[in-house]
Length: 73
Image (cartoon, rainbow, N blue to C red; front, top):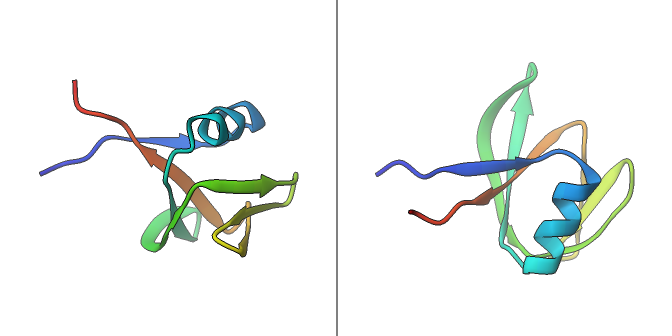
């Protein structure tokens, strides 16, 4: 079973995910490539240019990739 994800890169992507109260997956990056899912954190609480806050944890935007699962069509 393959899931389709949208990577949240821009502030507009994050804003849309926050409005939708989407569950956000946090993926740890190693050498610029996705490595492992670090957390199934839940809805976005806040973001800055450097950090994203999910479930009371702050994740550095340059060290993690943030994704939402897209619904099947």
